Amino acid sequence: MASVSFHAISLSYSRRPGPAARPAPLSKPAGLQRSLGSPAGSPGGWNLGPRRRNLRGIRAESADKGALEPMVPPYNVLITGSTKGIGYALAKEFLKAGDNVIVCSRSGERVELAVQQLSRNLESSMCGIYCTAASVLFCFALPWELFVMLEKERMSKALVAFAKHWQLIQINNAGSNAYNYKPLAETSDDVLMEIVTTNTLGLMICCREAINMMLNQPRGGHIFNIDGAGSDGRPTPRFAAYGATKRSVVHLTKSLQAELQMHQVKNVMVHSLSPGMVTTDLLMSGATTKQAKFFINILAEPPDVVAEYLVPCIRSIPSSQSMKPTYIRFLTGLKAYSQIFSRLAFGARRNRYLIED
Image (tube, one colour):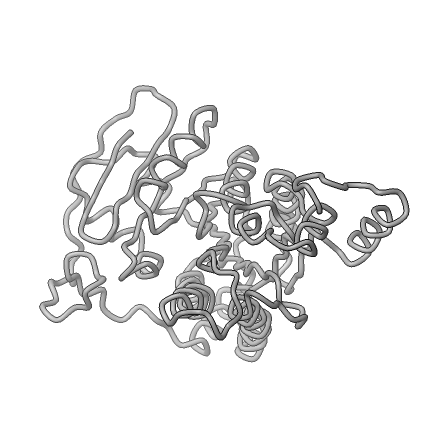
């Protein structure tokens, strides 16, 4: 296990034991200068310079280059909030498929643990990113060349190779309800701030940075935004703020699709991903009412079961060279109504996870 730490970001890399040549030290790229007035979340105060590119300019470049380079496996996959729950299960399935995975979390300890657990019996490359709460999203904006340039120890060749060949799939899974199941009138400001900054502002920043990065890639990339309870417009009593933020995910995803289409961007696409009801710690912590226990027993599935279905669907999009917006759903309406009918008619799934009153 090699570990590199600097200021707000800690990066860890794990692979199967074996001989590895040590790369030569990397020199600092020309033009990258120290900035005295950089934001608090930036690592070491580095001034990254202008990174955003005009969408119209990208459109013109794409037209000049002709056909885009195809995305071929193994894919490089970044999953936010992937040290537990559905994010962790998705990471495991991508690794099983032979892909390279970046695990992200606000907890350095959880990143280290997840990397160790996932890499025990897998040969794929993977690494972890940890960000402090103050700069939880800044790390996603950093080009990999900066990660390599800021190393305090030599990294393995595998990590350097991982940094230079993106073919990226980004899954924006990070979300929070702050384990708060109360009426909005009883919810504190701190809880509301965590929910909104993570689920809404965080998603916007992740999408913005991913689009800007993918526009510069010959193969482009695919972004998947995960929805949740409330995204279909139905009320979410006891977690109204969470439901409202998840409803905004749908609007943001459609707006980004429209923006990319308006500027005729051909190499980046934003998709919707719906895992349905998953037996995560967050869901189970709210199972305190009769109604909640009833529907969790009927509709919920373990993270591994959901991930086994979703990952092949996600991987099929770049493999088919499709650049059309897609909505991938695990729990469809037909499946939900079928399971509810089976419960009412035959008592199926009663007390499956929780003892009902």
